[in-house]
Image 1 (cartoon, rainbow, N blue to C red):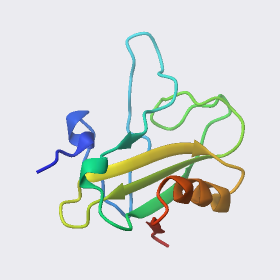
Image 2: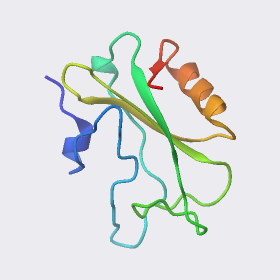
Image 3: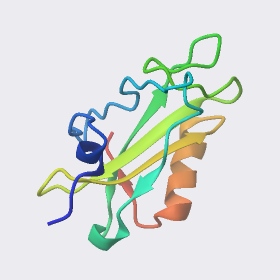
Amino acid sequence: MPTNPATLTGEKPMNPRRPDPTPTISGRYGAPLGRPNRTDRRDMPAGPKFSLVRIRLNSGGYDSGGAYWGVGKPLYYAAASRDDTGALIADRYLRAASREIARATICAEFPDARFYR
């Protein structure tokens, strides 16, 4: 059975409808630059269902968990997990001018992706 990558990093398991895109992090030498994208294609179901949320950044370009993103276009987080186990199978951080563009970017990588409303 695949392991939830969130569990490996000490993060709380993800609720597919209410992901925590900005868990608190700290770096030995200060704030890390962004956060990693993860994908487990070995366990990818057909038509993965993504949640898509906008991440608010403060005026300095930091998210609420302490990662630095800089300023620019809005930042979005998309995550999909297996329905049966809740294991995270894909998550993406991306910059896009709108939610529709962020969604189209996810669909370009995962053509059969679906989204929660």
